[in-house]
Amino acid sequence: MSPSPHVAVTIDLRRVRRNAVDIRRRTGVPLIAVVKADAYGLGAARVAAAIADIADGFFVFTLSEVIDAGLAGFGKPTIVVQAASRDPEDYRSIGAHPAVWSADTADALRRAAPVLSVDTGQQRFGTPIDDIATIDAILRAGDIRQAYTHATKPEQAAAFVHALRGRVPTIHAAGTALLDDPASRLDAVRPGLALYQGSVTTTSRLVEVTDTRGPAGYSGFSARRHGVILAGYSHGLRAGPCRVNGRESRILEVGMQSAFVECAAGDRVGDEVELLGANIAENEIAAAWGTGPQEVLVRMTGMGVRTWRE
Ligand SMILES: *Cc1c(COP(=O)(O)O)cnc(C)c1O
Image (cartoon, rainbow, N blue to C red; front, side, top):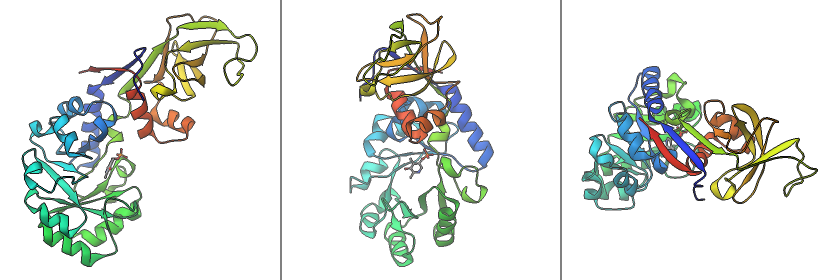
C-alpha cells in the first residue's frame, strides 16, 4: 500500500493528548502507551512527544521502532515484544525492556530487566497461563519484576491476576477493549486504539463529477450522480461510508487508484470528500469493511500525505 498524493491525512495531536489525559483520569492507573506500527500510522515520534508527560511508558513490537521514534529521549521505559537481540546492552542503552516467555531468553536478557509475557488465550508471544512451574522458572531466570498479558476478555484478565498476583510486583492486562472494566485495570493500562480514536481526518477531493448514465464502473453500479476521487485500493481504500461537502454519502466502488463516490446535484469538481473524521468514526467504517477499528486507522493514516496539528 502506498500513500496517494491526492489524499490529506490530518492528525490532531491535541486530541491524542486529551484522549491520554482522559484514559489516565478514567482508569486512575499508570498509562503505558502502545505506539507500535508508527502509532497505528499517526507517527510514533510525534505521538510520543505529544503525550510524553502523561504516559508512564511505551510499548512497541520491535527494537528498531524504539530507535526510529527516538523513544529513549523521553526517559520512560519501553516494552519491546520481539527480543530479536540477545545482548542486554541493546535494550539498556535505549531504555527498552524485552518481553520474554522462555527461561532461556529471560536468563540471557536478565540485565535488561525483561518483562514476562503470559498467554491467556492469544496463543502467541507468551508462556501458557496454566503452567505455573514454567512461569516461576522464567521469573527466576530473568529476576522479573513485571508481567503482562494481551487480554481482550475480563475472564482472561481474571485468570492472569489469579496466577500472577503475588508472584511479580507489577502486572497489567488491559488494552482498549478492557479499559472500562475496573477489575482488569490492575497496575497499569496499555491501550493503543483508545489513544488515537477521533484524532485522524482523512479527506480527498472530487476530480470528476457527472450525472450517471446507466450502469457504471466495473460493477455496473447505479446512481443519480457520481464523482471520482484519486484514492483506490492500492492506497488502502475500500467501499463504505463517506461525506461529500459534509453530507452523508458512500464510496460506491473502489478501483486500483481511484474510487466512485455517490454525489448530489450541487456537488462540483474540487469539493471535499471526508473518508474518516469528525462525522465518520473508525467503528462505523470498520463495520462496513468487516474488520476492526485498528485496521481502519492504519489504512486511513497510510492513505495519503500526513500533517500534524499541535
Ligand atoms: C497492540 C497491543 C495492545 C493495544 O491494543 P489496542 O486494542 O489497540 O488498545 C496492547 N497490548 C498488546 C500486547 C498489544 O500487542
